[in-house]
Amino acid sequence: MTAAGKSRTHGGVEKQQRKIHQADVEPSSNNHVTVQQPFYAQPRAQLSIAEEHEPMAVCRPSMTGATNSYQYTGQIDNIDERDTDDPLCATEYVHDMYSLFREKEPTTSVRPVFMESQPHINERMRSILVDWLVEVHLKFKLVPETLYLTVNLIDRYLERDEVSRPKLQLVGVTSLLIASKYEEIYPPELRDLVYICDRAYTRNDVSC
Image 1 (cartoon, rainbow, N blue to C red):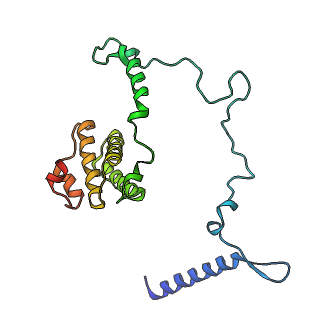
Image 2 (cartoon, rainbow, N blue to C red):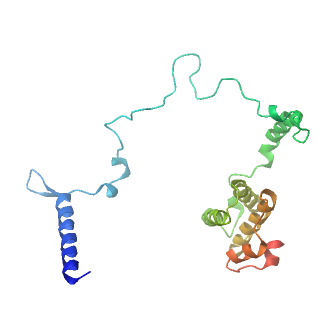
Image 3 (cartoon, one colour):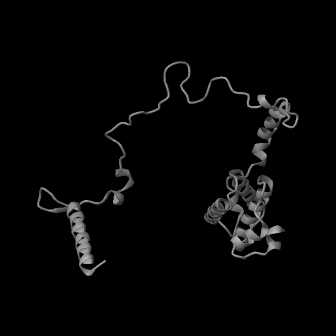
């Protein structure tokens, strides 16, 4: 771009900035100047979205009739009906299995306050680890169940054993390896997991 073009562009930007500043300043009735804050600087309580205009289509529950809730009251589909002839699916045991899962859930689930037993790490460090694992999960194009099982394994391990700050990433990548072997057809190779950790751990550290 030539010098004249840069000058015109710079002059246009300055004019636009003066217009913006002039728009933010309005004279009041008592001859004082009031500076209006832009919308992003105002408190959240002052922001209002679509206060005057009602959306064209709003889905609201019907408050007339016998039911007044969002709960589905129709006939429940039998999702195991198509697998009744497959002996590998064992559909006759489905209800017993889910009853057992529901019975064991209160005693086998991870406690909500399990991070309180960790003296060296906190919830913020765990969230950073999970964010990093999400990026690794996307990089390797793994199935969603692998990520869910990875986080579950991390939480279960942190609930039982103390983990130092340098070893937290090792716990995450090892959990990812275990979950990948369970869920994936082609799990990531061990050398790739060592590489994404910037070689902070060895192959033996991850595999053991």
